[in-house]
Every structure is written in structure tokens, then in C-alpha cells.
Amino acid sequence: MTLSQRAYISSIIVHFHLKSAPPTLTPMDVGTHLVQVEGNEGTKHPSPYKEIIGSLMYAATATQPDITFMISALAQFSQKPVKPHWEATKCIVRDLKGTRDLEFTYSANSNGTIRYTDADHTSQYHQHSIMGYAFLINGGVVSWSLKKQPLVALSTTKVEYIAAAHATKVALWL
Image 1: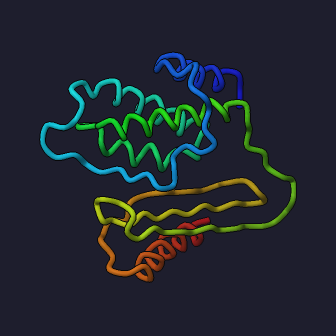
Image 2: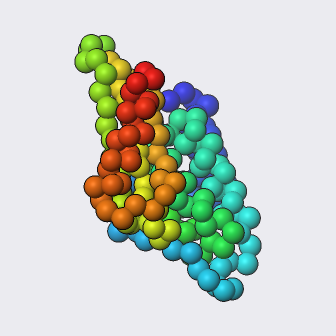
């Protein structure tokens, strides 16, 4: 990570008053369930929430692809964020605080092309499955995706087949 990337993460930490917060080991707890709140139970001023989501989206795009899923999940609540959503965003910032000095490294080994594919069937409140893939060529990521499936599948097997089909299209292109 370059000095400017570290400085950007540091600026997020300072801007959102998390300088004294301890770093976390993971960007989001495994058991975190994010749900949409009905009625007027949301925060009165969601603009800081939108601001932190935008800041983290830039970090995810520029230097931290490992937080992309969490940011996309939290961005769905930008209209009515509540305290658990805000706490989850702060947890991601605290994770960045602990990992801002780490770097991705690629080996010089010639391992060829490796593909990873996975799907999650029913953990999301919107009932759409999440699918993702990553392609590595000689140890370096050349293509990856993580997104909501466009249809509601009725079984884990169908979800996995849909994810494999999308990854196969990319494999043929590569």
C-alpha cells in the first residue's frame, strides 16, 4: 500500500472520530444480521452514514477489495440507517485501521489459472442469494466479482449452479 493510500485510510479514521478506537480482527462479525427498519425508526440525519459508506467505497475500489461485500451490503441501508448499520461501518473502519500497513503480495510461481467460486443461499434479508468468484493467474487476481443473484433460487444447489455458470462465462472469456 502506498503512502497516499495509508494517508487516505488515516483521514477516514480521523474524520469519523475513530482515532482512539481499537482495531478489530475482522471487518464484520460473522453473526451480524442487517435488516431494513420499517416506519420512522431510522436515524434523523443519515448524511454521515452516506459519507462513511462513500469513503469506504472509494477505499474498497482503490486498495481494499476485501471490504467490498460488507460495503455493498451496508450501502443498501443508506436511506434509513439505524444504530447496528452505523456500528457495522465503524467496525470496517477499525479493521482498516489495523490493516492499513499490510500489502497484497504476488508470488512468482507459475501455478496457471485458479478459480474460486462460492454462493450464499439464504443469509440475506432480501432473499436473493449472493454469489462470487475470483480468478488468479500465476498467483495474481485478474478478475473477481461479488454480487446479488438476479433471481430468487429455491435451493442451495441451484444457487451454486448459477454462480458456477457465471464463473464459467468469465473463464471462457479469460
